[in-house]
Image 1 (tube, rainbow, N blue to C red):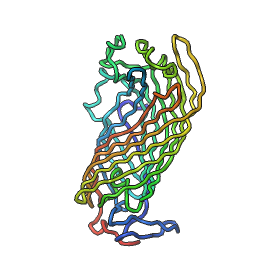
Image 2 (cartoon, rainbow, N blue to C red):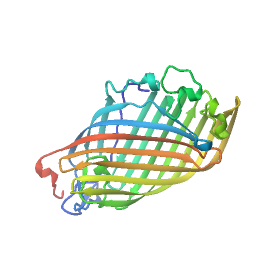
Image 3 (cartoon, rainbow, N blue to C red):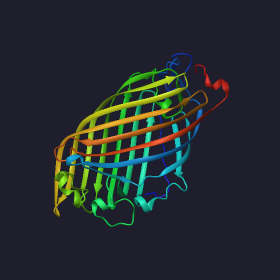
Length: 350
């Protein structure tokens, strides 16, 4: 697990070049339809370079009686990086920002592996994530409220270890006139406002391990027995539906937002602890999934400047753990420049 810097990459699959209005070209003997260029200009045939600032995040949440909540978070890092996109490949490399990641005395030292990839094609958007964290801090309570005596400013749990991996994918129905890539991968330009219905699926696995219950002793009576988790493996599979829309102002300024909600089957093998007794049990039930994306910025032929947000939350509709959820996501600020001769920004049909 890396402690000081993150290396991550996303492999993005694209469609071919665009001519005036919609056109079809051959790729490997297969006809591929491009964007309607009255709405979207595709620049994936050019090299797109970028500089960015980013942070990734993860959280565990439990809700109890009288509105009481417990929230655990790893000590996240802020990164600076550079990347390059061309055709079907995007590579981004980031490192920790010196001077901004020195708060271990407040939130503890989290050991982690955090890889997230977002794959945007003309017709679909896919999120991939693989994460492992050890040592969480509690952002919902103070040490005095819990009766803990620790050197850190926030209550910390070095014993909590969490691993998750997953994939979620949505199909873009209005893919000729709406582009996710324009807002989130900077190799296209959405020139007019447009939206699209989305539908897809998700598959996730979450594993948790701790030396004692996630619920501190002072809060034990406010939470269900099924939330006193010590160990567990959670697998979720389901279908999802949603909508995305990009508002374009004066051709260049854009605001993109999307929401996808899903539901499906959850299989759980969990061990809970209450009054020093552990109980292991396998359950099957329903779970839910929520995916949110948003972006804002300025786009043109050569430049794209913007900020993007991407988050996925997974929770359960099961009697014992209906108030337990976890989530992953990232925030990024991008400055992108498309590289090429002037005539390359208006390519002809191949």
